[in-house]
Length: 136
Image 1 (cartoon, one colour):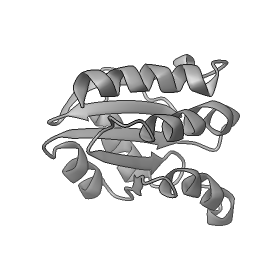
Image 2: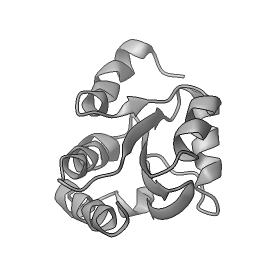
Image 3: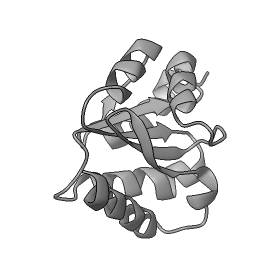
């Protein structure tokens, strides 16, 4: 676990643009299994989350067509929430950061860490926006 003062600004990167933090397994289950579309961002303290993933998530969330729900869990903080989210992302291995789009409880699109590292935020956002246009 990281000190809360360290992760607070990283959480705010997403909550200030409309993401809801999910801090326990029940909240994750309720969000993902809900009707409609849900975008889950597995947030992280790593550099690629700061430089690539969070900016991409913010850009994509501002798209006219976007998921019904924008939610986030924080790797290294709320273990049960993160583990539950990752179980819904199977068969993909655990990855931080990562992003997943669910429609009516089914995984329809995922971006893993290896697809985030070294890629510009706009490229990742364009990938997400394409998925939002297709599924939302």
